[in-house]
Length: 306
Image (cartoon, rainbow, N blue to C red; front, side, top):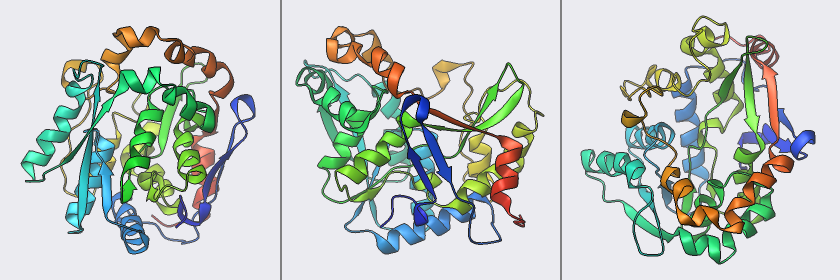
């Protein structure tokens, strides 16, 4: 099964030469983002090999994936990764608490994967994986490593399409980052059974997200106080689904899910050479693809009816 439907989304190059190919949808009609995600999920489910295991961080993306699977009454497992130090103390319980609360709410018994992150760094595994997929984000290697250890079909929301505001030009851009695409490279090069980009799996999903009313407001500068689409995507997820998912308030971090690596960045292991070198890796692998939002919509729409 393709890592993205018909390989419509693919990156090439690295750093300054990083470029992303995004093909328009073949279907001339797209529905809401929820409807298009349902279609992608049904396609993935029909073509999967093994039982689905959702890597659930507790964030909006993985929660949306789980809610769609529950909506479709599909059989799946939830995997929660506990990142621990060398003494067994958890680094990311402030993050995974959302995942455990979700499982409790829906009477789901999760699979808990305990990863000694300190050993993951000191053993050289963190840097080995990063080098193999040209990844400059220290948060990515542990997740894909766990995905490679699971006996089943791993499913990740990863990022849905993302819009970023450029303050200098006062414009909104569709953004694709090399570090995020490193997940696709890991799955491809290691022949991992799974779908790491479910929330951007099809060209129809990409376009339907960009055409959602909340994103249209954002991309046309009608929400001038925002700097990105992460605090808006819950409105897209809720549109037509009835999920009533929470909205992130990034001005109140105490009530918002973070990245899970906050304590790691403040810990002793962050001073290890294999951790600190990521500052240098960003200089060569921090590729960024930007497409002006109105241009992206016009190019991908191709007379599409919404």
